[in-house]
Image 1 (cartoon, helix red, strand yellow):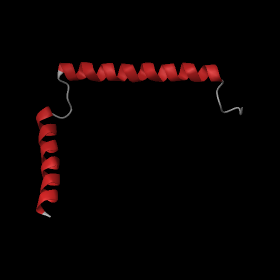
Image 2 (cartoon, rainbow, N blue to C red):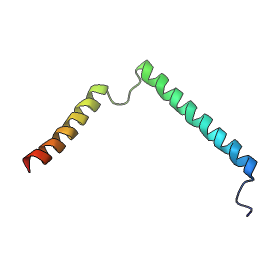
Image 3 (cartoon, rainbow, N blue to C red):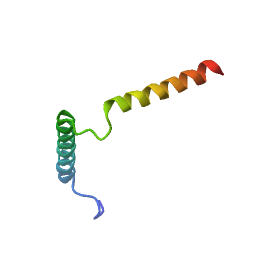
Image 4 (cartoon, helix red, strand yellow):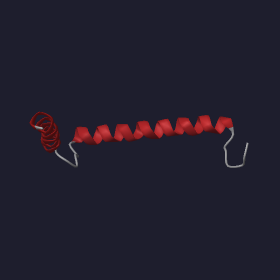
Length: 63
């Protein structure tokens, strides 16, 4: 084991901390979305998705 590697028990704690941080980020994002603090309106995302899918379909069927 080199000095740069943490002991095995620290890796478990580090992974647990990572999981907790990830869960907290997800909770915060869900709360923002429920409050309506969206950076991009949902309808804009829907239109963008429709344009992308339509473009792919046009590319497939028109070539």
